[in-house]
Length: 156
Figure (cartoon, helix red, strand yellow):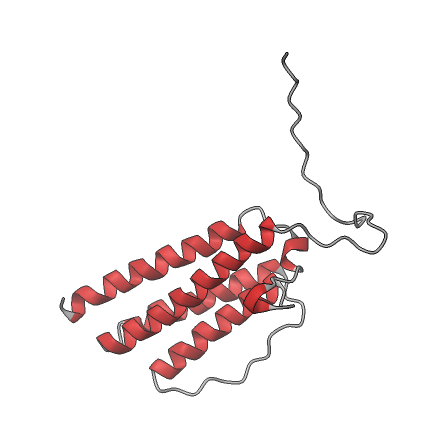
């Protein structure tokens, strides 16, 4: 495969990976963004993991381009709009500079990004399949959104 043909394939991989991340975030609430992911992410919240994902993409791009990256602190409690905007900005930078990288550097960059995003998507699925921990006393938090349950009539 020629170098010219490599980059469109890499762009398609990035697009598919990001689409999976966005799909995993569909219908997530602010409470979900503030919830610990568990697994390899430990106590890190979904919002913070997404902010870390954007920072890692920028860091990898800077490394691939042999550039220094300005120090950047992650917000303590990132809000969903902030992290989605940050993810979009990081991806824009990656796509803008992908064509300046040689084939090996571009492949390495894209593989690292896709691997991180895939791991996060898998953990989001695991987290959401696990019920949130109730506070002491077992009462539902007052600000927690509950989805209506469907009840079907019993037909005898």
